[in-house]
Image (cartoon, rainbow, N blue to C red; front, top):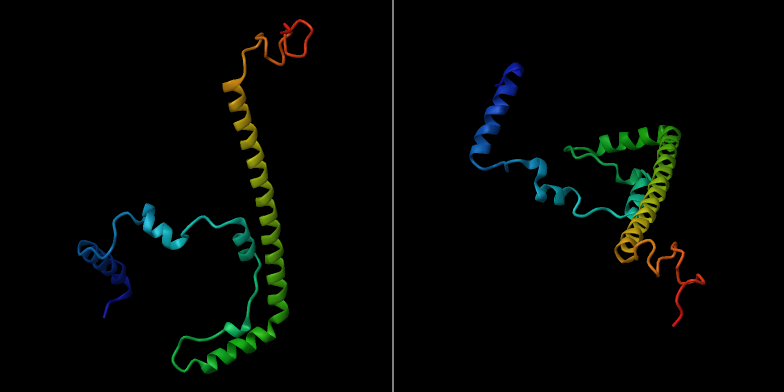
Length: 151
């Protein structure tokens, strides 16, 4: 039996032995497979909005222990006794989450507008005539000015 003070050293040794045997992938921090398993794709705002609403269903309370029936019954009784507290907590957290999602949506719309303006400016700069050219809107010889040659 391992003493508590020896447990960290033993765990490190076991991990090194398993790592040497190929049980652990190297550099999990940036591993694309790990990232895909956590979030296969970037969640949409609609999905995030669904996740932001907290709803606790007492029907899904259960115990994974052998003979967990009495534990599950106790959990359900505790939930029923603390219903007012949990309801208030759920309500506040959901309100915060929904407000945060509304703010995210506003920020995303602002970013989209800024990106559209940047693209328009970039396209305008690439195809715009130089200042003073006969087609430039701010030149004195612009298309609407009387000095513009007529054909």
